[in-house]
Image (cartoon, rainbow, N blue to C red; front, side, top):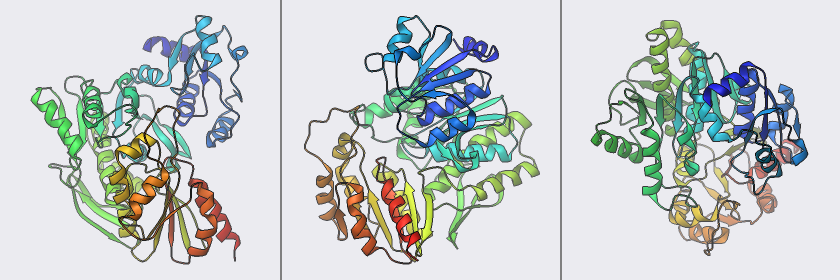
Length: 481
C-alpha cells in the first residue's frame, strides 16, 4: 500500500480526511496536499486552531459528518483514531462502497516507508524534541519533512515543516500502540514510565509497547535514547541482552559520549550549556533542564542525518544549528507565553503527567527566581489521576499557589472508581498550603483577579480546557491600565 499511496499523490487523486481538524490529521493533510494529492475532509462545526490552517492551505472541509459526503472517486479515506464505523456515518459509508479506508496512524506508517524516516517517541518531551529537530534540520539545510504533535512557531504556526523529500521526522504516539505502524530507521526515545492507564494498566505493559516499537528498527538502525530517564535506559538494557544489532546513542546529563550535556547554567532568563561533541556554547530561551535534554536529543538525531547527507557538520551548518536553538521559542501549549500584562507573565503548558509538571515548575523556578509562580492545573482522565494521585499531589512543590479543577474526562475510558477533582485537591492540600479548588476553570477568575500582582507568573497546565483561564486573565489585566 506504501507504493499505492505514492501513486495516489503522483496522480493527484482525491484523499478524504474524516476528523481533519485534529492536530495530527491536519498536519498529515497538509503533507498529502503538498505531495500532490487532492485533499478534502470533514469534522465537527466546533472551531479549532486548525480551521485557520486549513483555510490558509485552501483545503475544503465539511463542518459535519454525513454519509452523502462520501464519493466513489475517493482514492483513499483516512480517519482519525477517535472515530470508527460504529460511531461515524462517513467511515461506514466508505466501507460500504468498498473504498480504501485507513486509520491516521496506519496511513502515517505507509507514508514513512517512502523516506528515510525517524520516529520520536516517549511519555514526555516528544513534541518539543520533534519541534527542535525541525528547527535544527532547517539550520543544517537538510532535505527533510517534519511532523510534530502541536503547532510550532518556527514552523510558521503549523505542525509540519517541508524542506525536501529525503528524510522524514515524525512524532510517534504510544497510545494504543499507534506507533507500531511507523517504519523508522532511527528512533529518539525520550522517556518511558507509567501513563495512559485506561489502556496500559501498569508500567510493564507500557514498557513492553516501547520495546516492541524499538524492535522495529532494522539491523544497524539507531536508537537515540535519554540516558537521564530510567525507563529509556531499561529499554536499552533489555535490547542489549537480546543482542540486537543496533547503534545506541545516549544523550543527556548522564550520557557518555558526544551528546553529554555539560556546563549548564541559567542567567538573565537564558540557559547556556555545552554538549560534548558540539563545539562552543548553546543558548536556549526556554526554561528547564528538561528542555536542555530535549535539545540534546534533537541534536543527536539531526547530527545523524547530517552525517548521512553531508558526511558530517560543516562550520556554517553548526552555526545554523546553534542559531536555530537560540531562536527556538517552543511549540503551542509547551511553556507557551501568552503575553505579559500588568507586570504578570501568562503562560500555558500541556504538562499532564506528574513528572512533566514537576520538571516544568522546577525549570520556571530556576528561570524566573524573582517571580511568584501561581499554577492552575486540570487533570486529564480519571484513571491517570487515580493511578498517580500521590505523585500529582507532590508535583506542585515549586509553585507558590495552586488552583485545582475538576477532572477533564475522556470518552475513551470507563472509570468506575471514586477519584475526582476534589480528591486530588484534598490530597494536595494535605501536603502544603496555598491550594484552592474551583471546579470549572473560570470559577477561579474572581479569586485570581484579586490575587495576581505585578511580578507574578501565572501558568495553566494540563491536557484539559483550563487554558481559557489564562486567556481570560491576560485579557483582563491587559485592559486594566
